[in-house]
Length: 154
Image (tube, rainbow, N blue to C red; front, side, top):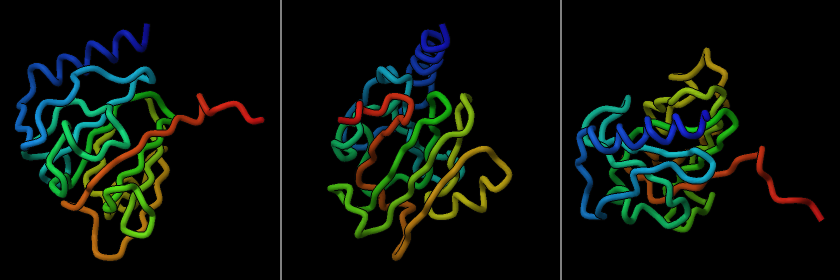
């Protein structure tokens, strides 16, 4: 039931919200199988131009948002959802990156990829930012992880 509700919320947001996608084209308007979706924003604090619901993790920003444009994100999905955003197009940790774990089931705005700790200090969320030359406006790809559905150990 919860997943069904989230799917309808995300479809409504993606359909009726302002859609100012870059040259990458329109992204999927539905959450993935884990109920996860991220919406990237051109401005800090989840403001200015926004993408549709992005779920195609690991394929760069193609079909979701222009490379090196996102400065913040709104993350949908259950508590425990982990998203990592990378400056490096292949998702290497040799450049700036942010690992963010949702601590609640409600949508969360991460107002800056560089200063998540200061913005989200009194929350149930966890994060790790590794910076050098900055991540805001330089996001090239993202990846999901959900520890509740980790692959079986052999």
